[in-house]
Length: 426
Ligand code: 2M8
Image (cartoon, rainbow, N blue to C red; front, side):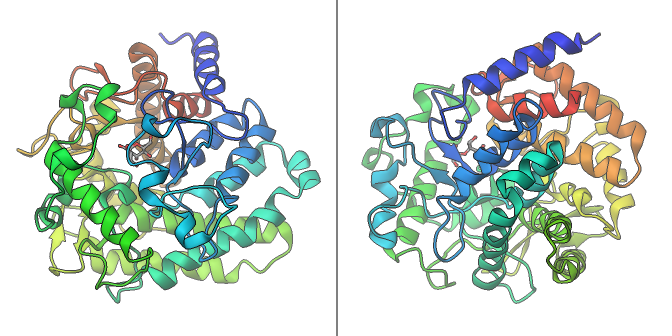
């Protein structure tokens, strides 16, 4: 039996403890800056504790938006020592592109869940949001963000967004990226110094070879002035998670547009177009899941990634029933455990402890919970909700947990784990 009052108090302590004045760090030691999609999930939880802070969380992130519309995946905290995180601001050198006087950021992106978070944040306290002009100020920025994705990142000619680095997927070392990553020549481990291993066990993090490839891809992008073209990007993948969150966020943008007196029609049309393209290009009917598409090789990737069932968050998705079936089937077993593993439990690449190669992540669990509710799978959604709350409680708001034993892994006092807990309890 979960003690809901005490769990909410504990989660609130974590979330408020990671607040740094304008935004929230994912975890004090391992991630001492602001991360893009973390801030969106954090706002969803924070809105129940302080609607003002939740609005600020998103405003500070969009304050670092680039003129081309991209929302950077990391906004660096200027008072945190440079050696606290690798690759830091001195690696990305955003000022060389943006000029001085702007926040130092990375040049990559992360999944576009922000409009969804902005709409949820608005709904927590509409009066405050209206008084502060929260949505009228954020809406054009959200539109510019989505426009960047659609206009600058559609490399495959399918009307779908490509990610150009595993870090952009948010699921950094997912087995889904093994094939396209294997073509990248890693930077030798001696040429940079990882900082993550100061805070987390090596067996729970990406390997040295993965990191060498991450650094190569990021340095190449940087050295081309963050220009988006297939000639620059050796890694270009249409990922179902990114595209599904864009579609769900376009649906939220329609609600936001209607609230502020703008025309929601284009956003509704975008939801329909994105979801049709996803089903057309990425859906694997035989497996009942979405796969990524590797733009360079023309191959489908990663049928075992949980990213393939996250499109449940897209309103009106035509293949939702098939996804629910896959979610409860032997590969993910969500109906029994309530805890979605990040990778197919039956696949030989499944690794119960290693980061995005098997462990359960609370933001993904939250998205699937929402998707199940959206498609009227209420009982399964309830199983997921209970399991997430109990896992967060037992493990103590860890970054991720082993899907078989429930053992807590990665960072402690992790912000989005706490944020999702607060939202699930609301
Ligand atoms: C992880 O990624 C960062 C790089 O962006 C890292 O490993 O250093 C991922 O889990 C990502 O999804 C998350 O946003 C970030 C911060 O929590 O950490």
